[in-house]
Image (cartoon, rainbow, N blue to C red; front, side):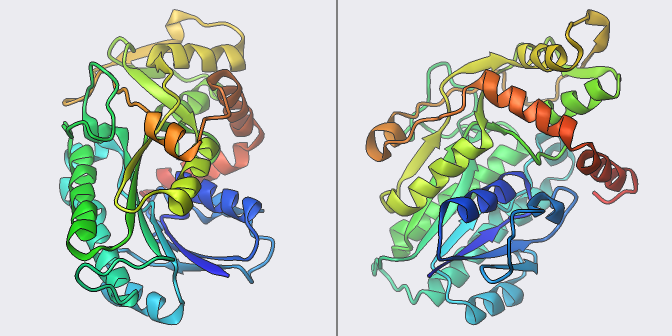
Length: 340
């Protein structure tokens, strides 16, 4: 039985990954480490944990060396999948230190402990273990043409800078110590259990409540949207089949303007789109107008392809929020009480 240490497993992508793994694999043991910040929510895993014989949760900060070391000493961990991150660009503009601590220091802390636990010495590559760093297409900055894994990194805000810096450390630990690593860079994820600070859940919630819908600038920002379970499948594939030391882009290679996405959501819920529903707000500083990444490598090398097209995925997502108002209201109530 393989043991997976999943950090940030109470967050949006992390919880969906745990759900996917428990559904897709037998004879695995999952350790979920999450600090339970404002975006971490154990309710995201309700119904997924049939029993506790294959799952263990620790409330822990990945920067806490002593606690993480105790977890490694108690469990024989085969894989580390690092989802834990501060990820909201707006927040990174006002609280950069927190992003540096979690996204960079936390990542290095995890690798140091894994390297010691796996008894990895200089230039001693071993099989059967791996450290997988979850990153983002935002590290490339705006690309006029689709960026490949070999394209230079050009981050433009504190969030993407912290993720790019973490990547350099991950690569360094492969080059210097032969710690088996991979990095995945995915485009914008969407789907169930996403905290309502990102575009799609914000627009769904406000449309449901007949509130003004905030749109940055003219809404012409171009984004590639990937349904979260497609990303989870890709991450699982990279973990088990990816060549150590390699980076893999994950996306659909289909892009949509933010305003198009907003109008789609309105039409699903209300049936018609009226301009008086929209409130244009000033775009944030250092905002990238567009991202574009190539997925040729993961398609050709690992045989992955997205399976959920955007119309189907967005409709499923809207329906999930409509069917799970209690989850949404609980999250929003927690935020109103200052628990963020």
